Amino acid sequence: MQKGSEPRSTAQATWSAEAFQRDAGPVVERVRKHLAQAIARDEGVTRGFPSPDELLRHIPGGFQDAPTSSLSDFVELAIQRSPWQHHPRYVGHQVSPAIPRAALLQLVAATLNNGMAAFESGPAISVMERRVIEWMTALVGWASGGGILTSGGSLGNLTALLAARQRKAGFDVRDDGLAAHQPLALLASDQVHYSIERAAQIMGLGRRAVIPVRTDDRFRLVPDDIPRAFEQANASGRRPIALIASAGATGTGSIDPLDPIADHCERLGLWLHVDGAHGASALLSPRHREALEGIERADSLTWDAHKLMSMPALSTAVLYKDARDAYETFAQDASYLFHGDPAGRWFDVGLRTVECTKPLMALPLYGCLATLGVGVFREALEWGYDLAREFAGMIEAAEDFELACAPESNIVCFRHLDGDAGEELDARQRFVVDRLREAGTFYTVKATLRGKVYLRTALMNPLTTREDLEALLEAIRVA
Image 1 (cartoon, rainbow, N blue to C red):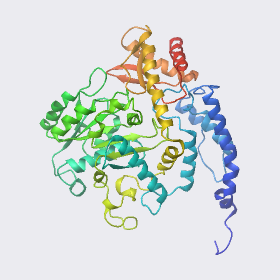
Image 2 (cartoon, rainbow, N blue to C red):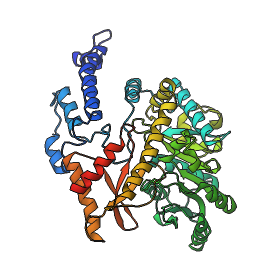
Image 3 (cartoon, rainbow, N blue to C red):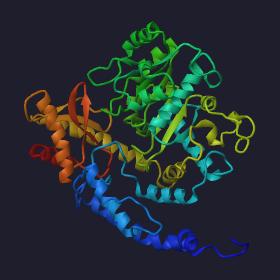
Image 4 (cartoon, one colour):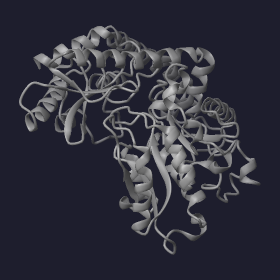
């Protein structure tokens, strides 16, 4: 292109403010209609539940130079072929119905699209992230805490465990690697998220490095079994460096007894990491934070804002009791981005995370906290927790249902007792999940706990009611 010439017509039509205005109106109106339909229960949670092969037939490939779909048709396809998270009868996975304002702020973030590795590329959002982290660490009870936001609990757990390895390995892993030193081990219950085992594999420790700690009848880690697991690790030739506790286990929502766990970790010299991806949001509630007693004694914590703070995915905080631990794992020499002592450059986020050009996830989170206030988050969390306890009571009162354990968060696991014991009951739960999705009446999921299949509900939507859950039990009965 010659100097001073006009941009090509296709670029002008695609990147211009006028193009945004032309596209935004119909899309925003269609999303508004979608939210209204979902919230009013005018349609099902799903419109059938097609198989992967069926969807391949509906979603064409083979992109061409010219468009192969209109924008309105594309948006309609995405909406109609996806489960509706905002439907009050979506009680399945731990995925939030995002606050509509957060979705709008996500649009602002996507439009700005600043890089977040260094302050110079994302100045305002870097400071917003700092303020969010300060607020979260204060809620935990850490006066000298720090951390970062990252893309999801799996990456958050990996990030925290890398810091634990750097602190507790007994040698400089960054410089020396693992090969010439004693193998390391992690202690965790069988209810921890699968990302812990995955992290051990990524870290070069291997899957066998995760030593299991026994759980009780409520699927919580048994603190008194920690010394046995510690000795088992030593006997296998591995040096245990960290223990992972759950604050809201993915399967059951159970919360490990953090205070006695911390006692053992202090005595044995273990880093205590709390996977609070799901349950750490209970710190917002004076009534429910009591179950997290001892969390302030952890060395690190993951907290998903895209779960019980209803942010668009993904938005995870990795928090440390000692802010210095955030720097020792990832600080790199990159003169085109970073200058000076890493520990003094809190504003260069890339010094503390796997990610470099990460999304501007602090913008919707900070924006909602600032413009809506904390109360709306607390109210939504307490509604979900209280409704889970009410739902558990309904299940216990019904002769044809069985509760797995009393809920400690907003997750309830239960079985429909229609059929003989054993495999037939397991098959019944699987059938119910599929049937409800196909009918579109409810979206629930299943979980296998100690060899038995259970139905599992996560009450993420503050618009879900007792009447919805009564209807769920009846829909299960007639499925």
